[in-house]
Length: 252
Image (cartoon, rainbow, N blue to C red; front, side, top):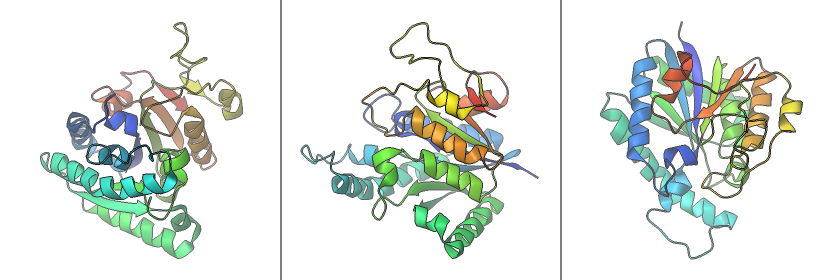
């Protein structure tokens, strides 16, 4: 039986350090999923709808308002899925969109229906691409960049592994953006102690800092699911991590 991986891709990864969605990064994801699909079922939790909309609309300084972010997400989500569909189809991979809210996990009927849908898609080799339904829910666009959502998906489908890919190699003993001698922490057992090391940077396209990633890891840890926090900016990042060829942080 294949192992299940929930791979969460943050906005900063999808834009590859720019202000626009990177077609090259989506193609990199395609290649990796194609290389891994014989051994793993991969469910993608993707941010980036608002970042996609920025390429097409200027809301004149209202971007900090929640309702404006919701509107931008509504504009950007179908375009983002189009980008995924085009890139993945070039590699012979079919995709499906799943928009979710936290209510879907709280209500038994909704969670069962969602689980059945995801399992059916995986059975036919279709990659589910999940995002928060930002039109009706706002928590992730304000505070989490889909970190918590990806953890809840991992618990729902009984995943073997949650991978949180963003623009940093993992958790460091101090902020690597401020201190050149910061050292990566390869393994975490005590999340409370790890949380004391977090010193968030400001700015950037995503809303999910290290605190939200550790909170997601805590959800998974409580359900016996391992979490990896890694830099998604490098090509082949997931394949190399699974082969033991890269450094990242594991929450055991």
